[in-house]
Amino acid sequence: MHGSSKDSITPGRFTVKRFILIALILSLNLNLLAQAITNVVARQEGEGMIVTYDLNKSLNEGEEVTIGYTTDNGMTWSCVSNAIGDVGKNIQSGRGKTIRWLISPEISDKTVKFKINAHDLTNMVWVEGGTFQMGSNSGVDDEKPVHTVTVRGFWMGKYEVTQAEYRRVMGTNPSNFKCDDCPVERVSWEDAAEYARRVGGRLPTEAEWEYAARGGNKSHGYRYSGSDTLDEVGWYDNNSGSETHPVGQKKPNELGLYDMSGNVKEWCADSYGSNYYSKSPVNNPQGPQSTWSRVLRGGSWSGSVNGCRVSYRGLNVDYRSKCDGFRWVRDF
Image (tube, rainbow, N blue to C red; front, side, top):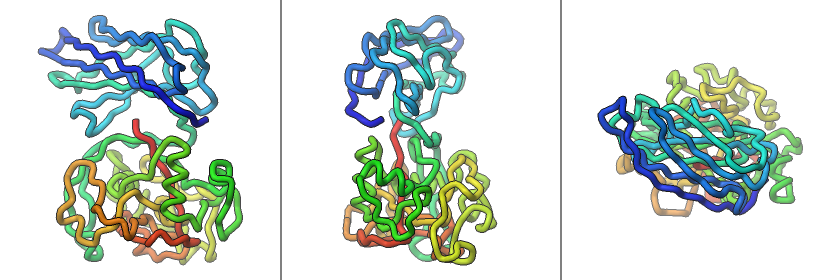
């Protein structure tokens, strides 16, 4: 379910006795429908954190309460995996909802910001933020030079947006290959960006896309997304039969993301720059300022093995092609 949201923020400062000093700046960002969460209170008890809140509306199917933290002022995010209580799915309305978790040793002597969200995470995968080597020195010129990039954590669609999903949100299905479970295609960059906006997200940056395609912090260094053998993970010119296929039929990558190599190319948020890598910032690059063309990633049903590599860069001038689709992301 998609709707407006309102943030509830409670700052605080705490120390943890087992460590020399930990400064915890608690930022509670509860993104449900407006006024769904009220009376947020956070406190520390020993080595644990406790948050109480009132939930004025039960979660809908697909919505989850999640907790994350950052030690670099929001540059990267990690999910709190050991939280218990009124967190996750199927949280019913009521007063005095409680979430507890132990403070992790990894945040010793660091300034930490916590965030609690409630989002619809149906078919979404958490991509933990991190640092990787972007590009390829053995690829074509616009993949060079290999450079260090750090991206923040984000949620990413497990699958490419299907025709059925697109029709439910946008009211139309522009695809050439009619198949509800196949990825939507013949969508422009503007179409894809508008869909993402309507469901409360955005298109991934090119750096986020490549980081996720490589498997994020679980990467095995594959040539394609999830394998060195393209037939295992993707539909391309040698096995597609010259058409798209239902999403999720091939092997996923290390993060559980499907079809990031092949099936349809995927729009990214960035404008395209052939020499952008030589001057790309390290932290969360957003692409060049020019908007005459946009980045496409991942290759397609009609693409070659070379075009389905995780580092290969494509582009389009907002033309609606039967090779082009997208997936969307949501910030923590």
